[in-house]
Image (cartoon, rainbow, N blue to C red; front, side, top):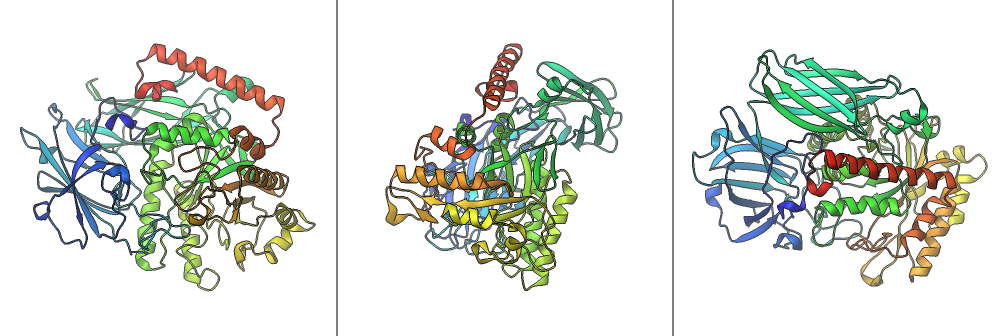
Length: 624
């Protein structure tokens, strides 16, 4: 089990870590009666990191319960003088409390973001250590970000079983007394610069210096040392502009050519001693909007996205293993898509790592709360800020989506406070990350957005063409048409030329068990499904009005059978057929460019794997 998952924080990697996934003692606490570890009646075992609602956890309880408890022992690695031991949690839904050897060490709110605790002072001098985790998660609480987790006992419509407790990797890490805690990367294509923000954690020290070495394709791009001031380093690292377009383009990251820049960072003391050393990666790429087009590295790009909810049949929102994440990205690309809209889920960082590595554009969307209140506003804002902080350095992310379909703000047309909330999250997101477009409320009722996202499940290609390609379409679209029964923009916030993306459409259901499943329309045979998908995609691809589209959806998800793949990722008709319908006929130039890129990446990987010992079966940073 521990070996099934890769390094859980791929953009700040140390060579040694201890995975705590696997068997833990477990207890359900239906009414949240227990307050301390000594109160708990341990009566079961669970396989972490799978939620207790899943069969893979060994529990498989999809009922209502307010809290659950976890316990296991572990051996602490030997610590050198000054070293510290940190316990990390990728995600625990929703409110977590952690004890080490019966002493409280951490509390955290938010089901989609990581947290950690320095447990050094709580370790026993000898013998096994004990960790206990309490996860409180009221299944009826609609004022917290919960995404697609159903508040009813049984999944209904487009909502699915709940996720309670630990659902991402738990792990231990040894760090020095003063350690590199955070890395943030940005890029400036116009100035040919890489931006670095580095923060330290632990004991304050004078005279520290941070060495940063950047390389790509076995070529050193920069090797500089900076003075640490106030525990931080903020630098714009100027690279030599290659000048010649061919080589310049080889250094740029895109979905077609996902070049990653390897980063090695060393923290040095004033006496010349090496204190800390980490690996990371970044990329040079620029996302912008030019008129009504979406632009990557100065080139207009049609977004071909697939809506991906990130569920698996036996493991819920947790991937079965790291290979499953990689396979999902490979399948999306094999079906002709160049990106994914991760819907109502903040995905495991390993997904983003593989999207960075393999080249998949990602729209990252905040899971919704379903009640508008002061508490829900505070909770979502806090967690969304942490999400951006965690993920902003991933080059694959090309857009942020704080709201979907007015969920959590159901009265936008009438209530000004709800409009202000959407506008506030839009501007907060732009403040925290000014480099990417923000879709304030995807689907309809826009009041602040860089891209107008439209959700339209009309199932007739002719209707789609009529709605989006008739004469004077823009004026009519924003004043008279109401896909989903909603206005696309609200009064006082007209469309001002932003790119338009059909960000949900399709949803054609096909299943061998049609009575127990549903979709927005239905096909009855694989051949009929293939024909209807092909006709619908041909219509959408013909619409010059659109800067892109997002088809619903990647794979069947519980009762929703509208995936291009079955839940086990088996295609419903051949991948080659799906790809041809998704992207249209391939040009010889496109085929040649992608073939040359694949061949060159294989050569780079062979060269790097021979010069450095790899990890994660050759799929880690050694493969960059």
